[in-house]
Structures are given as structure tokens and as C-alpha cells.
Amino acid sequence: MCYCRTFEMNNMRMKEWVRAHSYILPSVSKEGFCKLIANLESLLAPVVQTCEVELYDIELVKEGGSRILRLFIDKEGGVDLNDCERVSRAVSVVLDEHDPIPTAYRLQVGSPGIERRLSKPEHFQRYVGHKVMLKLFSPHSPEDHSQSESVTTGRKKFTGILTEYDSKIGITLTDEDGQVWKFDKKQVSACKLVVDDIG
Image (spheres, rainbow, N blue to C red):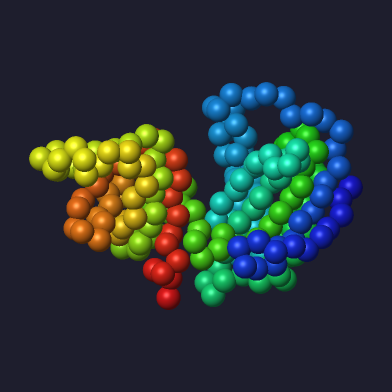
């Protein structure tokens, strides 16, 4: 069973469906968690498509003691509350049928927002040429090692134009000073579009 509420996130209204289950999610490895997310995407993406929107991303997070399954949907021109409600209802039927998450959780459906995160290869490929902000797990040195060490001491955050993405080579970023930076995807803890790049 579930109930619904409307709330604000990323400057737009979202639909949240609170689903009642009596299970407790067991501890899972990172590999197991990634497999769960992949299975959820395979299960839900076709359903979302029938609502004439794209499943942009999925999050399964714990916030304030509650687990949240968050679906980010998108379409040309952006999504509205009606899109969120339509997807919520369609997805709820499939989640009830397959019950892929053995725990109590809340389902939220909304837009990825203007400053959307980039997490999948297709996200990076789509936004080559756009301004992004990268956060790294640990400090990084520039491609040009002739520069002084002081230039990058302690730096974990980089902003610039995403100039190239390759699933094997990694991410290439050019900052406002023309400095080229190359990162392995595993170095990146987070990446998002910068708001002033969106027209």
C-alpha cells in the first residue's frame, strides 16, 4: 500500500509515494548495490518510456532514517507535475508486482533540475561542450606536469568546459585559464552541470 504527497525539490514540485513494507534491507556490498540499481533501471526504464519521458537517473539513498528511491525523469522542454504523477502511478504498479527492494522506502519522482548531476556515460557524452563542476576523491595534478606544485595543492574541485569523454580514457576538462585536465572516471566523486551554462 502507499500514499502520496507533493513537495518542492530542485525548484519544482515532485510527487512522493510512500510505500509500506515490513522488511529490513540487509547490508550489501558496493557490487551488490550497483547490481540492485542496474536491475531497477532495467525494470523501470521501459515503464517510464511508456509515459513519454526519459528515465534520466536513479538514486536509492538513506535520509533522516528513511530510505528513498528517487527517480529523475526528463523530456524535451522539461517535465511538470503531471508527468511526475503519471510516472509515479505507472512505476508503482511494477514495483508492487516485482517488489525489488526488500525494505520500507519512499518513492520520489521529479526532474533532475538545471544543475543536474552527470553519472552515466551517456550523460557525459550528451553534455560535451557544456560547463561542469567536478569534485574528486583526492587532489589531482594537471596534465602539464611542468607547472609548479603550488598550482594544484589541495585541489579537489574543478570547473570548466567538458571537452571530451571516453569510457576507457576518462574525462577531459578545460578550465577558464585554458588549462587541460584529464581525470579517470574513478577519481570523480561527483559531477554536475553549472547553472550559467543552461540557456
